[in-house]
Each structure stands twice: as structure tokens, then as C-alpha cells.
Length: 420
Ligand SMILES: [Zn+2]
Ligand SMILES: [Zn+2]
Image: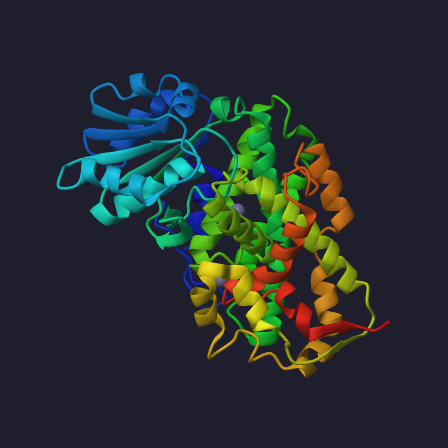
């Protein structure tokens, strides 16, 4: 049994936080040469003899041998040219193929290829297996799908795959920029963990130390492998993939994305939302997320360097906020009126908890340490690396916290004054 399946089983008993942590992912395989075993693994997990294989030209090539492994199945294929932005029309297209039939789905690829499959299978009640071709992002085990519908991207409740397979021989041959992107998505967890713990401290939001540690240990381990990320090292590729999966599983344990994402993911999401209507194809998820992570770590570290701060009620110019969000303004309004995530945060409690907040920030590696690891791992580092204007990036940093009903340290920026 894979290490990760052992961890999942270990979490099945009731936790100190009072919850039982479960995931609907039933089988995870990580190993060398697994592409030849796919058919057997699907059979063992009760998949139909009829398989719809969804891939794109690059991923089906990367997964060479997968069709041969499905000997004995009746296989239909849906091969996209290049699917970078998952759209509702892709979901509907797949639903059309699988509805009212005895058929299971095998998604060969990553992010935007898996997302429509996850939602189509959820809607039509079909079994799903993801065969990963690159360790590029942490959404493999996720039970939701970010999908663009009429120009707007939002997250739809979908389903986790029953089976996830990562063949390290294939993962290691993924383009270096995809491996670096996966590394960037992992470093982001440090910011996410800071935000989660601070929210728990200030609002009493649910928090589980055991799940938080699961994520933290996965990132800590990966930090040590930074110099090997872009190397042709099968073991490292497997480890990156395992860490990404682990944080995905951590999210299903808490039924939210707290263990894996914080203010940095929200900034990256706003960047995408504001640029999609202009037809700008997003960078790979972990590239934008990585750059946003460094920006947040720099800011959080700066806050942690302050011995004392002054806190006051949030002051926001909402007209400005709504102007930035344009067509999304209505949604943002609903998230902030009549109730606001910072309503329950007493400025006095920020002042009183300040030393603890500083400790939480210092409990993860610093901006400098993370930046140096990301450089070794070949990640994008600067705003110009991800081809954004500095002023646009700054605007996204400033206005992103209002698009979620979720407390982050960044959201508290308007409540905290640094003493000069
Ligand atoms: Zn727990
Ligand atoms: Zn992510």
C-alpha cells in the first residue's frame, strides 16, 4: 500500500479536533511503470468495461502505453488539441457522451483536463480515475472544479476521483516548468497555514493541528528537494507528486481549502478573473501562485518584524472595490454585506494577540528561505516573470481579500497600523 494510503487510513479514527477525517479517494498509486497497470487498477476498483479516455495531444503522448494497458476494455477517446481553460462547454460535451450509459472515465493529464471530467462525472454519477502526467498542481484529489462559464471562472462542487495514478517515469519527463509550477503551489501552503491559524486565533474558526501538520510536513520535505526539482530525478518527481496529493487530501479532510491555500491563492484567482474577459490565457496555476506567495511572505515577515502595532476597525472604500470588480461586483457585495468576515474581529484582540500572531508567521520558513528554494527549483519569482504589470499586480493584491468570506492576514491590512 502506498505511503499516502497509510496516512489516509491513519486519519480514519476520530481526531483530537472532534472530527473524523475522510476522503472519497479510494485508491492512490504512485510508482515506476504504472502506465502498464492502468487497466488492472481500474478493474480492481470496479470500473466499467467501457472507458472514456479524456486527454489532450500532449498528455496522451506522455502517457504512452496507456491504451495498450486497457486491453480488454472498450475504449472511446476524447482528445483535445490543447485544453488550457476549462469551460462549461467542455463539461457538457463530456456529459453528452457518458449520460445514461454504463461507462467510467479516465482523465489523462492535469488541472484543466481533469476539471471538466470531475464535474461531468459528478453530474452523471460515473466513476473517475485521474492518471497524472505532471506534478504541476495540487488539485488531483480535489472534489471541486474551477470552470469558466460565460467568461467567468468559478468553483463548482464536483467529485474527487475514486482512483489517482502517478507513474514516476512519466512524471519525471514532464516539462521542467510544470514541475517548478507544482513546487510553487506547494510553497504557497506556508501562507495558507499562517492565515488559517490566525483566523482560528481571532475568530475561533475550526482548525485541526493534525491536518495542518500533514500539509506542513509535506512542504518541509519538499523544501529539502528544491535543487532536484528540475533534474531528471524520478524519485523527486514522485515526491513532489505525493506532496501535492497529500495537501489535496488534507483539503478533503477539512472539507475546505484552508490546509492548502491562503491569501496568495485568492490574489492569483483575482488576476485570472480580471484577465480572462480580455482573452488572456492564465499562466500555469503554480506560477502565479508562487509569485503571489513570495509577495505575501515578504509582507507577513514585515508585519512579524513589528514589536507593536495599532489596530482599528476596517476602513474600506467600497465604491472603489466594486469598481475594480466590475461585473463581479454583485457577488463581492453579497460576500461583504450585510455581514462581513471582519465584523467579528475585535481590533483589541489583534493587539492583544500580536505576539502570538508574530510567532505564527515565524513558524514557517521566511521569505528569503522560500525565495532561495524557489530559485533553486526553477520557479518564476518576480511579477515580470509572470508577465504582469506591477501596478495591475498591486491592485490585485490590494483588492483580492474581498472576494472571499474568509479571514486572512492580508484581509487585516486595513485594520493594522504599523507604529513609525
Ligand atoms: Zn482533526
Ligand atoms: Zn493551488
